[in-house]
Image 1 (tube, rainbow, N blue to C red):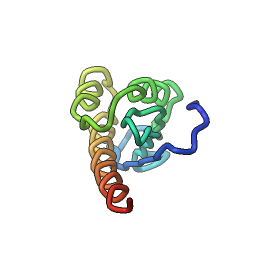
Image 2: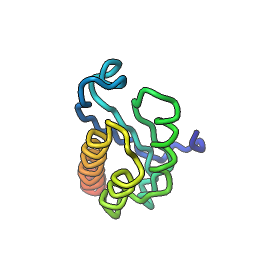
Image 3: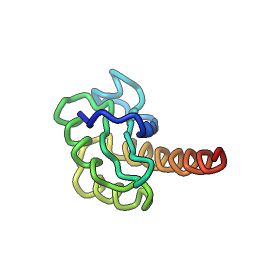
Image 4: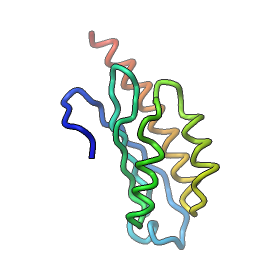
Length: 113
């Protein structure tokens, strides 16, 4: 669990899961959420709707410490190499959407100042 902070930003992304896997039977889509330090872009916590606790734990460990400001390519590469589950494509799609949302959020935040 992440440290108690009130200045972080929570960003989510969703993607359709492949049929015939447990997570799809439970959720239909994968939902991922990342808690990000807005000053540095560092991902300080993450979660997803994979069906197993180990899968969710793996996702969390894989995303924490990455910097969303530098783009999603490095994180996507990590999942391409290290995650060999059926939901890989959906996770990668959701990560791309999270990054797009992050960029949009940052732009809105700058415009509001």
